[in-house]
Length: 327
Image (cartoon, rainbow, N blue to C red; front, side):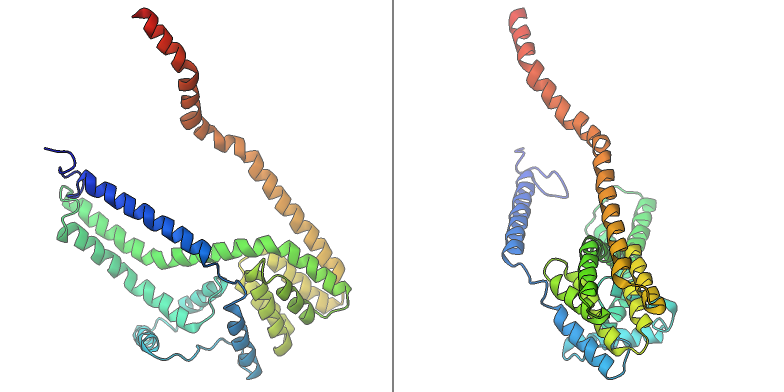
């Protein structure tokens, strides 16, 4: 039988597998070109959220309110909320923790909290249904034992339960890393603004405008903090909200310094200058640590991929000459 027409994997022939790989490669290339061609403005999208927060604080509301929506999205969200209320999920500590994690990911809508909790509720059943369909409907893994299939279904249930949290954790990690990179520059700008005589509110506003292009995540947090400093009665609450929205120890240190500066009247510029120097030294130490780990990390790729090729290039001609001489 011809190899091109003989089934190799899940009923697919070699020609089908090659066609799928070519299609996946073409799709990946198209996605890469599309992502480069449609670069989004980092300043766009955060302005409306900040304006909504300003209006809420003007009205005396210190908690985020869900924005009014129309259409099918609002109906679906209302249905999710009603299901969660029946199960009494929105009244426990999990909802508060989910709201904090979503704010750390840059998502501050209460609708997002409802969607996250509903995803935690239904994702295990969806993953388990897909696993059952693949195992018993399509016959994938027909040679597996019943115990193996049961373990696969249980694993899909666990994966479905953890999938929303894993996705949210990745968003929080990426956003925290982006904020960490821009924090030393932001502190330098805050020092300049403080030495120029600007108040803390105006300094945060100015720094957010300057960092809008390079570090939009940090600019977003600073702009929101400036809004809360201008409207909240307790300025310490605005600082604590900033430390709560960003899961970063360095920023918590900045918040502590700002609170102590306003409480005891210590010079703001000198304190921020010391923090900025510490953060830059910490970033340099991390870079040196990564550089020091590089030889150990490169050892395995060097042994597996580079040395065999080098041996073939060096010893190949000599081996060919010896073989010709012996013949």
